[in-house]
Image (cartoon, rainbow, N blue to C red; front, top):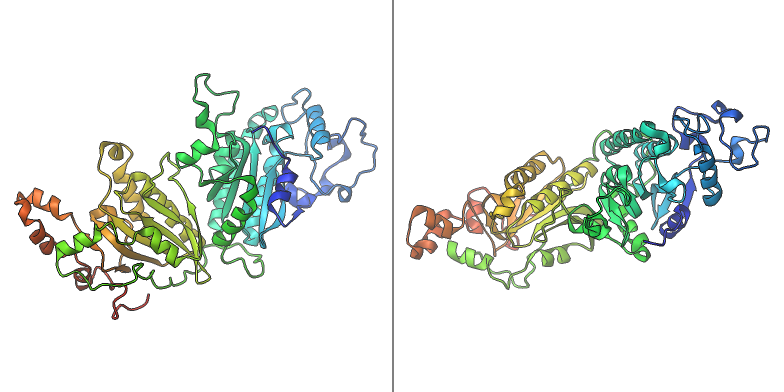
Length: 503
């Protein structure tokens, strides 16, 4: 991207208001303005001298500490910093404070790429850690507007070590049950991408932005340039959405609504030690077809109805259930399964997370994305709805190499560990473990157009060496109809039937 707006321009683009953190708050808990002497302050400009009368009140932003040329005494570093300050009007590569986006309060930090390429040094690390800490303490979501080339080489390993500090701050933010949304501007490379960007709960990117661990000057000469773009990172499951600049404020506003449902009231001063108490989930989505038919008379009829292309699919249920929703995309391990949709939505004024199978064989990336969604919802105290509809887990060679078994195990574990309410609606095919991995134990419902089976009837016939003519009879033996599931205690009821209780 040739156009690189300043940090303050991007802040103005996405916020209703912004209040920058004061000097002591920005510096970190172990520093106060009184500890800084005139001799330690780097020059703010060419003609500044220690004799000039400066007080912290005149400049609310913290000034870099330590030797003028940094911890390595890198020749010319102080002058370079001064030049960057004159060009940008900022005294460091990171600024942060509190902001309002779409009426929602948040802690917001932004990188100024014009200040030494938005690089991370000790002072920038102080500010990042302070922003994370403030978000956790105030129980406000964190928004990061990232634009950085990586760690500042003039500060050597001191700069690189800031990544460990950011990682520790990320853990504390997650433990507090506070959400983090990152926006990747151009460029977002090096440790800034590998900590703030990739470590966020939801990661958005501007079109055409460079997004990669390797910066433009350190990549192999024969590398495919498309691999280092926001679009390619999205295609491979590392970015949730690529959002044009003119839609960024609206997108952030929606995500803050979805990921911070408990922040409508006054700010809480004490950090949370666990997610908010789980709330009961509203009743499952109603049957999306206008006429709810009776349950199938035979096992084979149940299978045929579930496989009927005219029945409602996950998208119809989600559209009917949610007033508004936004999707998370990708497993953060290089994969995206278009047959699984995950995200957060609003139903009857309440936020609910969802993971929905779309009727295709679920790939490893789909299971991992669902597990990622469930873990995030659990941490934020948001109830989860899963829609089960798959003939089973993908079983081709590519799926096996991508870790089908471990991915299914991850989904099972995420559901088993969830402390929030999880409700499942079986809306079509329930094919073996690939379907069961997203089914809530003890809280699964079924529609009349569904079945759940340990194995597909055709495969059971093949294993048992029966005649293909015996497929319908075998389907009956498997007791896979919705009413069979209720009788066996595997489903709570059939949605749409008069006797089905509310959740």
